[in-house]
Image (cartoon, rainbow, N blue to C red; front, side, top):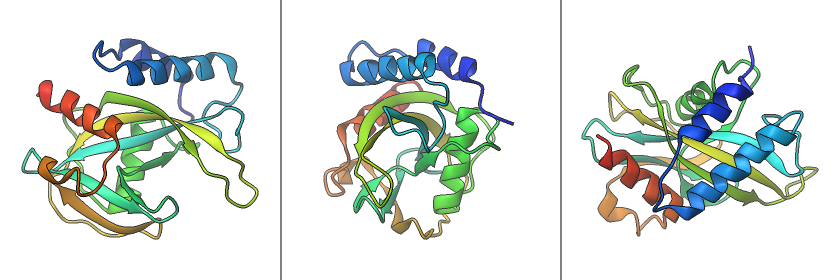
Length: 184
């Protein structure tokens, strides 16, 4: 199995939010990567980077968001990461990453929806140079509040919007959360 670049392109073309120029610019950069790269999902492609998948998981309360304190980046973020060869779709990659990093139990319905796109830099580490993650954010709902910490994280927690500042959540996450809430 391998993620189909055409299905990712279709998802990106369907994503739009006229009020979020940064997400639209990131969407266009991800579309260009898909069009020009022989291996856009390969974690070994560093110039200009590769496509990754992230999950914005809303808790059973319908309000809180699942966060991980990322060990390598030393900050609070949404769970997500690299696309693997066994991922059938880009949303499956996001789902797998969420479960691996947090142990969250995700609802099978509704299907994940693309609610954000964010291109951001990843610092060099070892043989891996500085590169870009062309990150696609998908919405999920958790069935329980049960969580576990993976080796990639220092901690995981549920965060209500009033605490977004406390955890210094990036603006792209806040805008994706607002899009999620506005379409419920």
